[in-house]
Length: 86
Image (cartoon, rainbow, N blue to C red; front, side, top):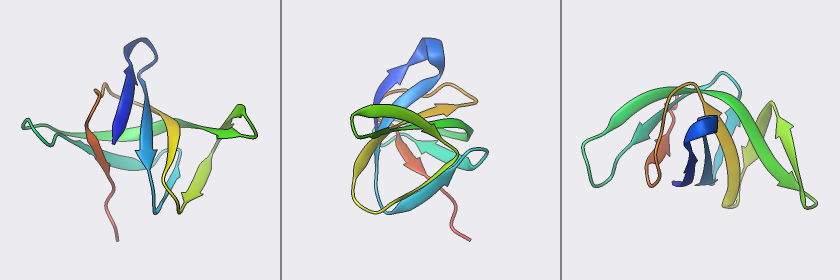
C-alpha cells in the first residue's frame, strides 16, 4: 500500500511484502475505496540499508518493508500496488 506520495518527484513510499520488484516492471495501482485503476512502470527503487538510502535495480522482499518507488505516472496515497503473476 502507498503510504506517502511525493508529487514533485512522482515517487511513493510503500509497504510491500512477499514479492520481487525491478526497474522497468509494470504494476497496477488500484483504489480500494474509489474506482481507480492505473498501469505504471517502475523507474527507480530506493531501500534503506544500515540507515542509508540506496538505489537498487531489483529487490526480493519477504517480510513487510517500506521502500521508495518512482513511477512513470502519477499515483496517490492509499492506493494498493499489484503485479501480474505469470
